[in-house]
Image (cartoon, rainbow, N blue to C red; front, top):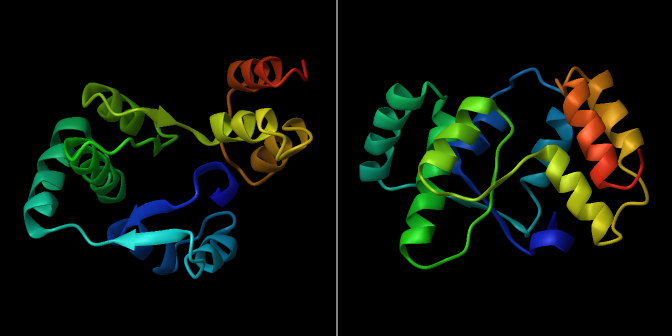
Length: 150
């Protein structure tokens, strides 16, 4: 991530989701990432948190996704370029609705391969699937094709 983007920002809401002890693949690696200088945690103002609740109701997404959307939207308002990393369909739809550029985990793998940070994406896709990340066969096929591994 730091080689691709330099600094990466996440909201304190997302950081809390990571550190609150949820059971998900790579939770320890994510907790370790929170200590790295390239990963910056941002606290949203209360007005943005109130807007998150509206976003949750409108798009049926969770608070973490809503807070990430609010952060990206605020940054765009200030003229900053943002790329929101989101995998879940409803979160992606909400971001598209707000004209926020998005990329998912599979897209990050393609980007990393295209910039020669990865030799291959196929083994990483298999590892994600082995850890119960849902990747449709159609998505895997498209990613492998875009990565030149099909």
